[in-house]
Length: 283
Length: 268
Image (cartoon, rainbow over all chains, first blue to last red; front, side):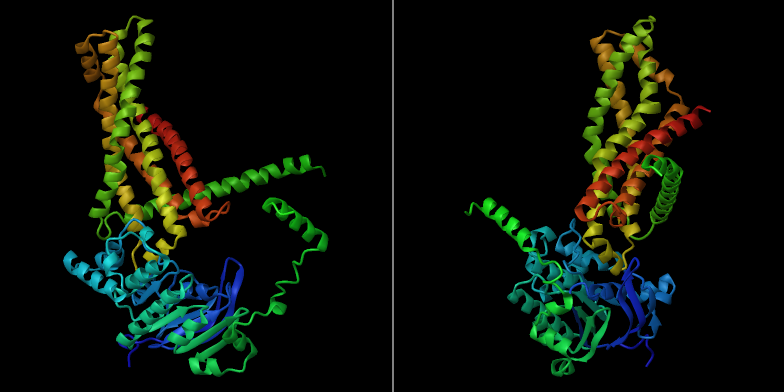
């Protein structure tokens, strides 16, 4: 089947090196994110998950290597072609990234208003329908600063979905949410996938509960590389000590040296304690 | 080698570094302005331009009229006493109209609009930058230059000459109030002097200056907000505040420099 007409695209990372300025975050990674599935990218904070996502959507250029969307190496395409490929992607940013000067009706309808000549009435209908899907239709007239974090994320998801993109990228959709809102967001993604079987959804997360609920495929980033890339079942059944730690939420201070390198000498600890006691009025 | 000697020897390199930085910044701003102007007719602009006209223009109208009124009144007062020393109080209309139309109108209008609307442009775009809203626009395939920069440039180009005209007219009225009503100059002579003093070249130079200032202010203010994240001296909200301050300061300096350059050009 021609890649252009194919409904779901695999995303391939080929010898990909990513970073900021001169700092390498991920070094020469090779992996395939399968099309038509929900893939979750896991990893510790600062491990390069969000960086990878920003590269996937073309907001940053890799230091070296390729990102293949279907058969297209997106960073070697001419700008016009690149934009054509990027139109196939929607992205939910960590905090929704809704435009602060617009209400939800305007925010979610923005791509339709900018790129199509649909009448305003029809755009509003589409927007309300999309907001309904994420349970936000009653808040269409609200501005982002009037909403909670979870509501902003759901509205951000609605905006990412409104053009029905075949590829949806979500940057930590459940971070900072309470368990109920997290579960709602997971359910939204699963429902979305069920309604759009060909859609490729890539979710960056470090919420292991969320991974078990939504993922078909898991990629684990660790120490500048890929520690695991495969189906959820293989991830669950893995004997790898690192993956076990992820699964068991087990901190390993020995590896990071977290509580050793900056241990306070006893005399300094006493000084700090005394200062705090004084401030708190404790004798 | 002593620290003083090291500093003296390092001075040329310091100056060279700053010169290169300045050249790079000017180059980047020029490209930014060109890209902004190129996008003026891209996509659906009308609604966005109208909103900016309201914000930069209509909402600044009262302020501009107020400043214009008092500038004209002060000019009337100072001019009257200066001219009285040579017995030429009747020339007050000439003095006020030429000073306002050629210089004070365009310059003060531009500086006031920079303080009111230019700072808001930088802050708004800067906040959008640090909260990933500009990234979101790019991901939605919405060109941020066409969406944010071009409407502000268009609106500035439309509004600055209008506001300058309002400033000039109200300023001349302020001068009339001081000179004619308070100090007793003949009203007919005042208006006659205003009418005969102003020639097409004066009006044209004032108009041209307001267009130049519109481009300068909108470019500098949008540029500083757009590249808030590239600042090396600060990050986050502090970067936005510093970007806003530097946009206002730089705009005001450039307005005065370009005013001198333009005046030299028009006088020649």
